[in-house]
Image 1 (tube, one colour):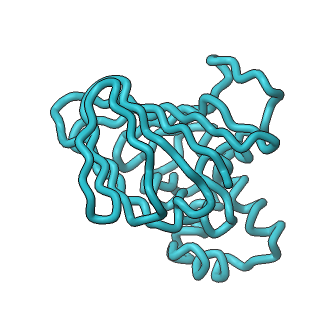
Image 2 (cartoon, rainbow, N blue to C red):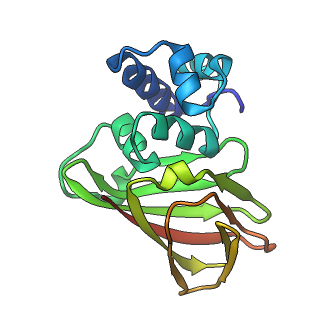
Length: 188
């Protein structure tokens, strides 16, 4: 984790604090529910560090939200139209992984996210992050590897993978070039 430098990270920190407080949870309780150290939760909420994608997924799951749902709350939802210039973007301070929330609304079970993954980046995601959702990954450019529950999928431009039952997953760009992919998910 690194020092927060942008406004979206400040909004994320504020959202995490608000979600925790709305549930009446202490930082220790959020830490226990998410598997994120209490000291890390405290630093995030005080805007001293910017959480990585892995930590955000764990916190979102503890709140019974998807990562996109947490990001949506942080960005304060705006109408049904999602204008390109207004789509929230977040960059993982550890990996440089960038996600743009193309579409997500509380009244609609569909979410669309565009991700740019730098070369050599691996993002592990626990099975719990896939609870109550169905999703597919569509590669737009570059190469992407999805290791899902012990099964490996090598994807190239135009390939699309529908995920199976919740399983520990690693999404990786093992190539020397950036990879851009789209995640489409539906909450169940």
